[in-house]
Length: 70
Image 1: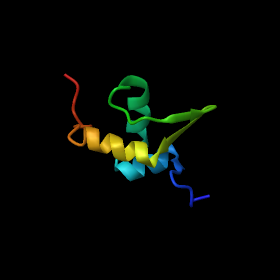
Image 2: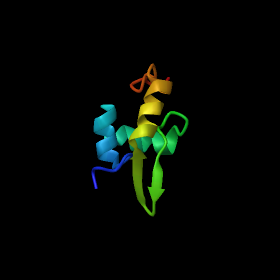
Image 3: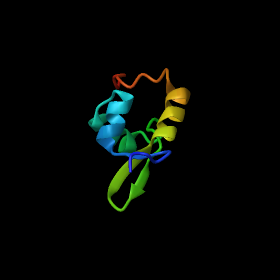
Image 4: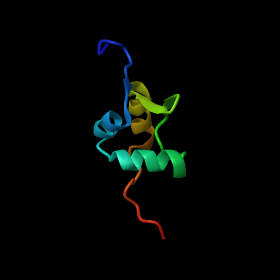
């Protein structure tokens, strides 16, 4: 199953791949959809495609995910 060309990652795996917390990914999905990487929802489960994460990194590489709200 890991030999798939574009495997789906769980939120925890995607967070590790991006070096952010799972909590940040969940928060950004619900509260900052424009800042969140694209995801796939299957039932109640959320997955991320590696290619989508790589594209998102390229487009948002300078995004400061640790910014503080005013």
